[in-house]
Image (tube, rainbow, N blue to C red; front, side):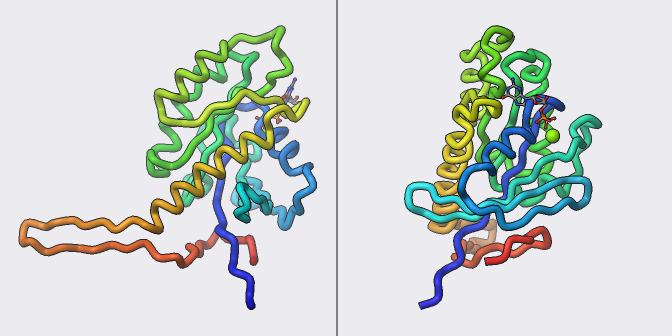
Length: 210
Ligand SMILES: Nc1nc2c(ncn2[C@@H]2O[C@H](COP(=O)(O)OP(=O)(O)O)[C@@H](O)[C@H]2O)c(=O)[nH]1
Ligand SMILES: [Mg+2]
């Protein structure tokens, strides 16, 4: 019997320059899972990665900014179709934490506000230089309805957990979409019925092949 294609998710990594986004991605990919694809296009880098969470296989396409964040104007194609967002700051750099609302506004211009998100306080190994209390990160994440973790790309502390937490949330959101039936009543009592299908979405950025 032919194996069904695992769901494919696009994740974007966002945050100020030098907070460790690229290092987090590299640390995550250095695990034993196989890397399928590496590409640089439209000024962004993305990597494809298979992962299994709670016994469910998924394929992730993770987009990194390739340094674009320095100019604070990320291309719309970077965000387009993102099903998960990793918002990174450094616990040793207060400015990078204070910049999160600006990054969130940028994301919300291009992706639905309900898109699953995780806030990551990176450089947890830099406890002696901590400028952002854990409680500040937790409060901000709760305020915007995001998950939260502190991590260290350097020691690998919590790096896998960041991706697992987000993927679990994305799978929940995906399951909900597939089971959802939306009825909308128009003034003429015309009822539009929308039923999400099990067909995987295919978009131009889908470089991952099953
Ligand atoms: N101490 C420490 N340094 C880190 C960590 N992650 C990244 N860095 C350093 O922070 C700098 C910027 O990292 P990079 O991944 O290029 O940041 P990006 O601009 O957000 O992609 C580099 O010098 C990294 O070595 C971490 O977890 N701990
Ligand atoms: Mg980078």
